[in-house]
Image (cartoon, rainbow, N blue to C red; front, side, top):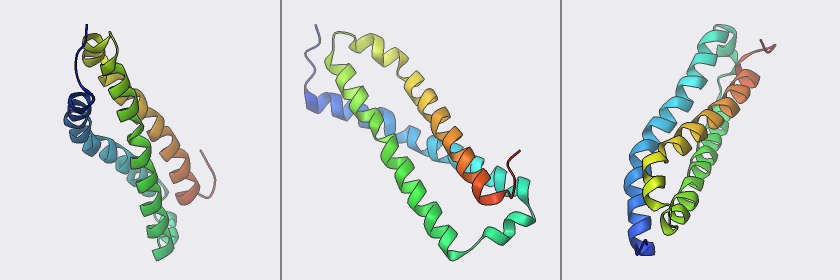
Length: 117
């Protein structure tokens, strides 16, 4: 039986997820840079202050979405499956990052390419 407190679960979740946030953001940035590079030199025309603001807002939204992992993690740690969850929670990171990467791909294609390929 799991007797872990909410505080302990939250601390464990922060300890696990925050170092991975850098990898998550790096993966999304690589997608954006790849589509910028792929559309270059035409993509250079899209660069503006407004685009920088849009990318900033999208980055904040992506990081808010990343926080959804905390809800799942703390809930799973409070269950009887805590030990199994800790061994396999990397899959939530992988699936979540892949999902965010696909969304980022479509957004980047829309920004940097005149016609999707």
